Length: 229
Image (tube, helix red, strand yellow):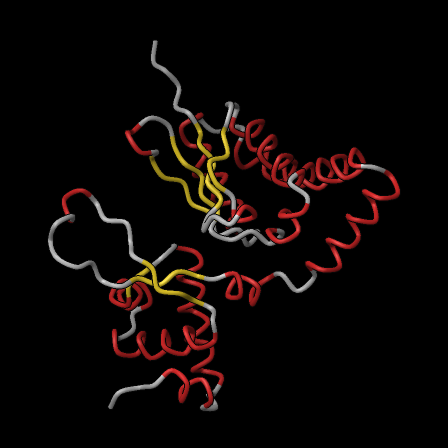
């Protein structure tokens, strides 16, 4: 039997089905664009079950088809499997219920006290984050800090990971979810303050390569590796 997305979207589902569907969506959010086979392996589901949930998520506008990036060894081996990435609507279904209120408050702050007040607010916001993370990150050897920071961010809902940067020089700290992404579209001071906090925690200059607030699929921060003497 072939499932039709419109039919599935209109069919009532029980809590178990919705829970599994949320797991599929969250796995895409946290791990980036994924194929049905990869999702099935990751979530210990059958590919048929995953595809059924993907059809519904597509119909709801929470995911979109995309072509996965291939390793060099995989190129030229035929048409790549279709992968699915999270959409802005899909992100909104997680932690962004108060975006309008937060953005309105910051607009009021900017209008009544100026942009510098917004900058000070952003710095104070990350000061709490930095204080909480310092004990988990700063005492570690430098090469272990990006992974420790990613773990701390994930515990706060940022779905973060650390991995070697392309070419093997340094690491990339990736945040697949940002609870304030839509607010940061209007107030980049939030991203700037967070980047500065990362640099202090990691004890290294860092560079933001991409942000969800600017329309990228993931926030990526480059952490250069130390040069051996």
